[in-house]
Image 1 (cartoon, rainbow, N blue to C red):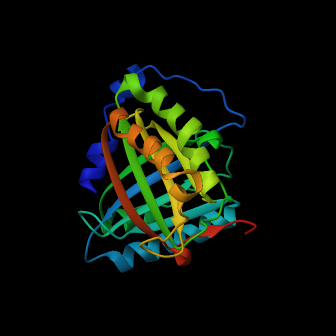
Image 2: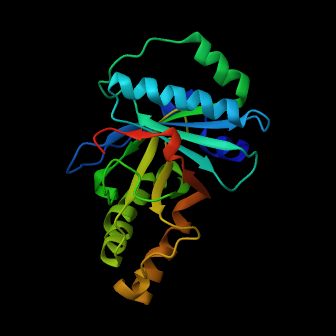
Image 3: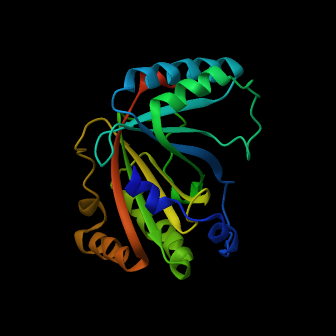
Length: 241
């Protein structure tokens, strides 16, 4: 958790001073809240019970989804990620504050970080709102400010088309716009097993061409991290699923 937080989180000064370039989109981006939570090792049951109660309240209020993922690999386990629509950018039914629930969460966790991620349809292969597999792989990639737009173009013009041609059916790609480094991109992909045995992208697009595409990425980055999560269906919901 600390490594991921260090990678993602920067000062608000950097966030607001960094020039934000807007790219043309066929569809409007979707802004989601991504909360990273470091849970106390002896309080997992209490945390999960509190989250299950919260899911019921959020669902009853009419929110479209509440997705919980448990991190399987990395430092500072146990770790969880909660993904919802961001209420600052989307009209959502209000939920009354519950101090008792807040106390339950604070007593069972060590730390949490809240990010707003803007998901770009042009960079994504979206099979729907609900997770399409039990396992979630998260690729966190940070560019320099000067390479941010080039990285966006690389995903849009090269990577995403190659993945579509290769048979990938679910990929969500976005960028942090609040709470962290605005030069950080996040790609989410689902699988029904781990390690995932996905389509042979190189065979579909050509080994030389796919190698050329993949080899471009490192030169645009200043850091990268990969994480694996398991979708906790028992703590989550998707409306009208």
